[in-house]
Image 1 (tube, rainbow, N blue to C red):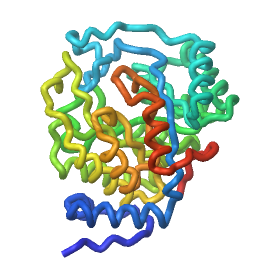
Image 2: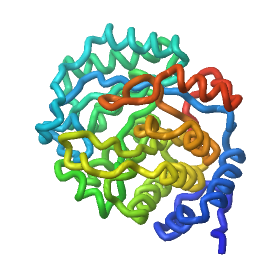
Image 3: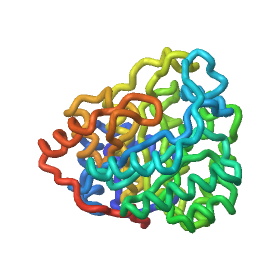
Image 4: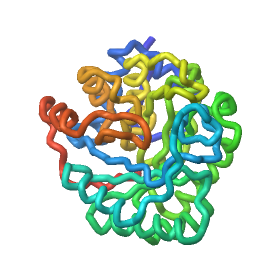
Length: 329
């Protein structure tokens, strides 16, 4: 029997409910997600975001998927220092000129240290906001005071992914606990910054683990404003280098399920999109994905080219609107 899905915002989902939704016949799942998407969002509003690695490599965390980890010696990833503020803002201005509404900056840190480098990140945030763009950063764990200072600088959103469900998490990361991640999300929310939090599909987890990750997010009140859905990009030299490619329909299912349980979040079709056909991407949009990263790189892995993304959106009749700030509930 089809699972009843009410187009209302809830914070009391069970893992079993979410898994049952995820496992619906695909066409039924996409149809239900599309209905809920249209009830809560403008389906023509697909936001484009640009992502820049502002400090690359040498991260002390041991995330099994990440070539920036100092634990994975075979990736060939060079360690680079924090980029100058002026360089980052030039990149942001170029991204805006190319049509980006949101500029995201990632630094390979376990947690930023107070001092000149953190002050430089604050200047980057102020500069990006001064361009009239949304600003998002991902810097690792944050203290309450660091979150407050980022909020004062005008930060729109903070990205801190859960990566997977609580039970599988220990198979992927040992240097930071699930509770650590949740504490950072609490600090970000308390500071009044939008939350950007999602996960990765294809690391060897089961469907129950995927549902459990979505349950943690969907039972936050309010829901995260942004939910990135990533497919593993298996990088040589990482412990997950031999993982098989993700089935594109797995991404469709995750986008649809995330849309159903978090009706107003921006569901961001993120890493791994380069491996999707145009048709698979369109199916994700139909299922409720309403944001893409564009530009040739996502931190350290390849991404779709800007021109091909613009052509894709044009061919499906979608005009990217003016700046739309992420909406909470």
